[in-house]
Image (tube, rainbow, N blue to C red; front, side, top):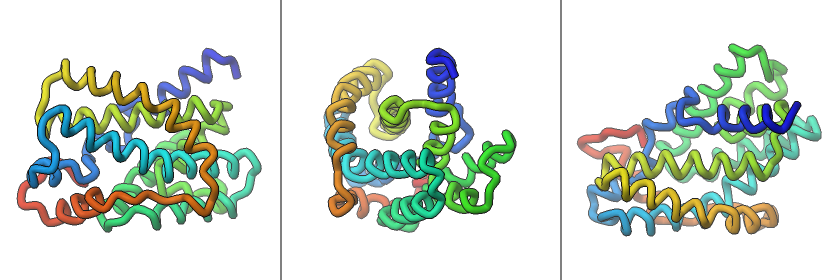
Length: 224
């Protein structure tokens, strides 16, 4: 596959229009705003920066690397292990449900393309969006670093758009936040790719509390 086509496939894979429902989730931000933990664009930036370094750096990206490697090695058992590990590290019922819903949505897309149909892989792909992204990236010959950075940009963009609605702040502030937070992605990725197995896992108690409280929040725009 040519480098140009690889880039186009990556843009499709990380697009906000990918039908996995990413725009419906705030990952605890909705409660954090209501509780007064996040106020203004600066407060949002601090909240998101913590997740960038902790969740992306110590969990999502290291596991994306392992899922990608399992796909390249055609190791369905390792893929299943790390898919289950990722789901187990989502600390609330709401975050686990989000992970499964995203995974199942991407699996349905793969079904439509008649890809990843082997039973040894199919049930694991349904557990998380990261699994399906890793499988497709290997199938489309997208390099791991580009995949991770694309995923990180999509994650940040979704969070910033949720912040526009919830905090709120305007589009100028949104684009400034996106520009500034993206500057940190390459360094975090370098760290993430060296995280050993024994150091895997996120640790943000306020995020877990916000997500748990969101499950019973009286009025909600978002599903998490």
